[in-house]
Length: 198
Ligand SMILES: Cc1cc2nc3c(=O)[nH]c(=O)nc-3n(C[C@H](O)[C@H](O)[C@H](O)COP(=O)(O)O)c2cc1C
Image 1: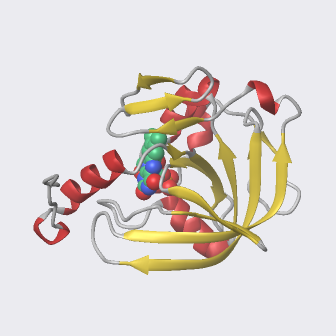
Image 2 (image 1 turned 30 degrees about the vertical axis):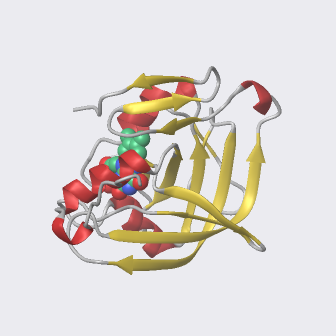
Image 3 (image 1 turned 45 degrees about the horizontal axis):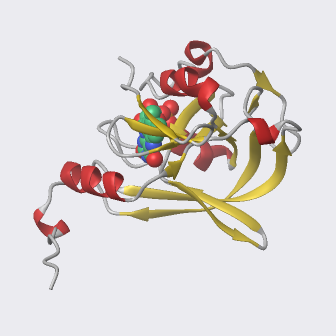
């Protein structure tokens, strides 16, 4: 009989649970989310707690968890405006994506440090990341709050209202997130490491 290791979440800290789960549930696609505050300040940030959830209507979910400063700007913006764009990330976008994960004050804009160019969307106000091969324009369906404190999930469920697919999609495969600093490049099947900026 195989003796599985038992990990009781009731006995783990939030940080330990995060490390355990994010190392086990892999690989995860990365949603580079473009949103905008009600004052019109653009925001860009990556999220790997992200998945497709349905097709009728098309829907996607991602989770900006509560951080040390509470709700992340992306969550606040989407609650206020109901609109965002999910941009998929390939290898050449890695550095810009990583820069966009910096915890900047809400009145500062990650587009500038990421170096990405924005292009107008068709159905929503936030711009798309021009270099991304797949851009999903989304409208908020529901935010589901599960738990309180650092690491608590905030599931952002959105309806995909427009899909932009690059004509050379076949040449650009997304990267995905593994545990810790590890990433997987679907282009060559290799893993690589990336430290968070700052
Ligand atoms: C590859 C990658 C994946 C990430 N995934 C998540 C995630 O799923 N949920 C989350 O809350 N933060 C995630 N982060 C951290 C956020 O990007 C980071 O907290 C960011 O500063 C949030 O930006 P905002 O406050 O402008 O919304 C991830 C960072 C990286 C580099």
